[in-house]
Length: 154
Image (cartoon, rainbow, N blue to C red; front, side):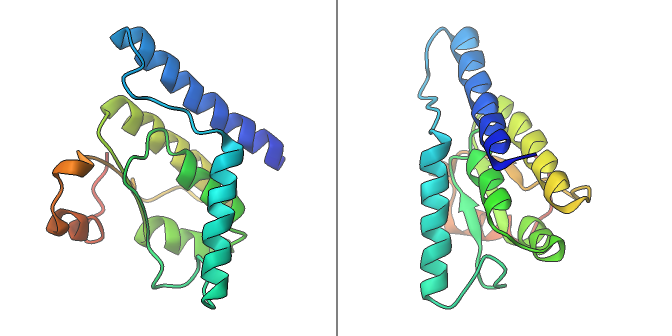
């Protein structure tokens, strides 16, 4: 699958969710689809900033948390753009990458999306979900810390 096809798939998933919420709730309800080009720019900025510090996404000290994850577009594109080995991506995905999302429907979509991208990029099945169905604004520091101590699913 080409990078263009990967970008188009992430756009399709995000727009599907946006349309689903509009249909179910009769309003946009704050759901905004971030264009994949913007997501890619932000991810490249993160990768470049890490490089300036002599680090990569493979560095064991780097943790990635998406506090308003939606359909998982940011973490999916991060996996697709990271140029990590399968072992490095496995470590990042299972131990140092988390998504928080309030909407249960978005969590289900994100979990499927992220597991699919993980499988495409590594050839492996994900061992657990990295998506957490929580209200980011209601979380304490202890709640955030516990995200890294658990392998609970969405």
